[in-house]
Length: 309
Ligand SMILES: Cc1cc2nc3c(=O)[nH]c(=O)nc-3n(C[C@H](O)[C@H](O)[C@H](O)COP(=O)(O)OP(=O)(O)OC[C@H]3O[C@@H](n4cnc5c(N)ncnc54)[C@H](O)[C@@H]3O)c2cc1C
Image (cartoon, rainbow, N blue to C red; front, side):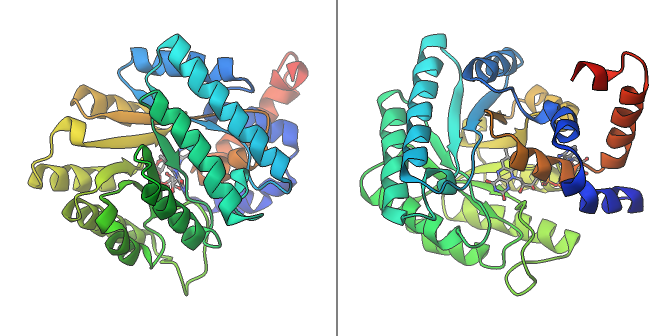
């Protein structure tokens, strides 16, 4: 990332919310379920499957977590009615992980049961390292309740990930493997760009050897290239793995995967609690300085985007 971009990333929390919102529009379907469904329909028409995420992070009250379960139930009903090809992703802290782990497990269990009734699937996103052990424990408990249509996420950035793969192997889990968005201290996380990439590839290899279903979530061409080599070496057919990307990121790279008959799933977030997710995406955008400059110029221009916001 260029120097100016890195400096701006540090200043992002000071950027007004209205600007953050405009800059992050490409990453979010919109505020309502209908927005997510419209986007998923478009993605399906372009040969992509999806996973819908209802935006919202750590809750402080049990009722908030319960309300989110209700919203996911509505999402499943809408998916069924509209015949969309999409699963859902959930965030454990939004479903009460920090309040009470059992509550969180039961909330996720309700969502997974809803998915099972409709032949659908729930992916449990991975949040920062304070949640890793509890999230993996919840996943194991769900599986021991006989729930199958649920998967988890591991982060190549974390030093523990290879051990986590070994510990999960008996479950033949469905795992989304990604770099990991949360910056963690050096004691528990690799810091170097190349080291994280190498651990990503090692994790894919270990997951394939463990018989896991692997969802490779990245926009990094190098990692995708290595993943394709490994998938080929393991002789997997196109329905035995998938790639995943975020809405609004590197669409042309996605086109190439779809053209070559690989399954590609796009992460489609929607909802009113857009701020935290947007900040994470903007912090990863290597061209953030350019975008802020374009946005600022747009607002200075008569009739520019600032006037209609
Ligand atoms: C489907 C999906 C689900 C995810 N779920 C989780 C999760 O549960 N937990 C978690 O910690 N992390 C999750 N992530 C985020 C992930 O950990 C990384 O932070 C993110 O994918 C960026 O890493 P990368 O592998 O794409 O490599 P990078 O090296 O960061 O990106 C490769 C290239 O992609 C482009 N790019 C990447 N991000 C952006 C952006 N925001 N805007 C514009 N261009 C961009 C740039 O050209 C960049 O050079 C998920 C990612 C995906 C794709």
